[in-house]
Amino acid sequence: MSAVIVTALLLGAAGYLALAWYVWRRRSARAAGALLIMLLAVGFWTLSYAIELSSRQVSTARVWSGLKFVGIVALPPALWSFVMEYTGRGRLSRRTMALLAIEPVLVLGLLAVPATEDLIHVYPADPAQVAHVGSAPVPDTGPLFWPHAIYTYVLMLGATGALAVRLVRVARPYRRPAYAMIVASVLPFLANFAYNLPLFGTIPDPTPFAFTLTAAVLVWGLFRLHLLDVMPVARGVVLEQMTEGVLVLDVYGRIVDANPAGARLLSRPRSELVGRQLGDLVPALNPLLSTPARGTLRSESEIRLDPGSGGPAEAVDLTVSITELTDPDGRQTASLLVLRDVTDQKHTERRMRELLVAQTEVSQTLQASLRPAPLPDVFRLRVTGRSIPARLSGPLVQVGGDFYDVHPVGEYRWAFVVGDVSGKGVNAAVVTSLARHTVRTLSAQPWLPYEVLTQLNKALQLTQDAERFCTAAYGQITYPPGQVQITLALGGHPQPLLRLRDGTVRAVGIPGTALGLLPEVDVRDDTVNLSPGDALLVYTDGVTEARRGPDQFGEERLAAVVAEAGSGLGLADGEVDARRASLLADAVADRVIAAVEEFAVHDDVALLVLAAC
Image (cartoon, rainbow, N blue to C red):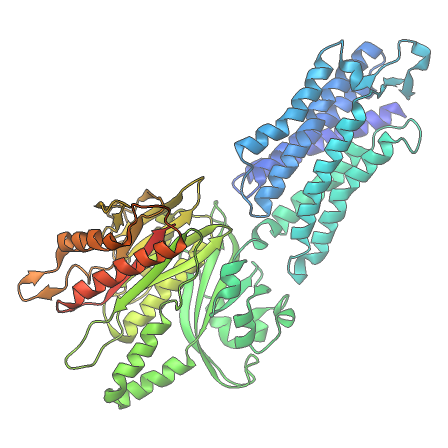
């Protein structure tokens, strides 16, 4: 009997090593490192236990019984690290890892010292009282074993619960595998709990065997079924709040998620969309879905859905953008479709061709639709935006390419973009919409600002129009202790101005290459820290290029206006709360706009002010 158990354990250990090798080959995937540590920990536990059960002497069994705790105590921190990364909460901090390491260090320290090892496991001095599994001596539990066991159970159950909460939210096609993963995650706990009570007398520990099933199911679900990639993608605040329809497809073309706007555009409840082939629901999209991928942006086009062709009660004109989502190794994990209802825009364009006198009203409507109104409330910041369209002859204005946007990208993480698209009119509006919504889509990925602008450059390169290029300033807002930190990247854009609380003004950011002109761009990140009373002005070149005769507004005049703005707010006195930060943001924006309007505005003007409180 003992030989059979030892052989099974050795085969299990070999299986863990095989799974660990499989995960190692895919170590660039999210949470793969933590899963690898889990597999190695259980593998070491299983191997040590196999050698323990093959021992005939108490002295030998004692050594291997103690060594198996190396794998046991490593499991809870590894599992928590895996769950945190898998559920999108990021890696454990060093402080948390240090706290989780206290108990394992104490347990291993007690086992390493002969005078204290009996506190964890005990071999009776009388050989007749030593319990055996087959012919192998096994220890009794020491006085500190159950505190250790309860601590381990609490950590393991907490991590398993957090994993289960995430798994039950997967789309319908993946629910059965997800439920199987939940059950497999609970089995080792139940097996170990029953063994330690003990409920069945002196038997071999079934926990390593139960973990074999758990590890196999986890690796199968996360890597073969792509649950690791499909679940966190394009979800959260950005997806739910977008006015454009968003559909997420798995690698087989099935809908795994849809936001409310997407379900509304297809005139179907979300529950009826998930799990269906998009090509079967909307045949008009089949040509786009079969287009070969070209970088991250597979295709963009316009389609018309007639009644009955995909569900809408009335004919709908849509612009469709399909973006490939890939893992760090370049493998496709999902596709993201952004559907924008342009039925009204198409009708407006026809009227613009017929009624030139209505151009101003129509243009202003389109211009407003390309910028967020109102701007969202951002934690510890007050944000305001302003824009002036360039004027043609007389009172007419034309849709320009300047834009700005502020949007959440995670818990206590925000992003903003200010851009300037070349050209005017509807074509500029199309590129502006592409740039703005591509940035929103890319912001949902765990990429740094320079990577987001690099991907935007690739998206603009894929278009056929050589005039489709732009400059952009893109920043991500985070909150290290006591600060508001902005990581900023510039793609051919003017350097923003930082106004400190004392009125000092300086340019920030590293100048980079304009986007959409060259296959490769030189874009780098710069970090700007804002303290209460500081303000960051991000603007387009229409500000500094405004002219009054031969006199250009220029950067020096702009810096002087920014320094003067807010001088009457008494920022040097007392705390800068949200109200005073709002006054500062509005003062900077209004002073700049007022100064620029004294000149002739030949180009669009857009600016964004972020004031810290």
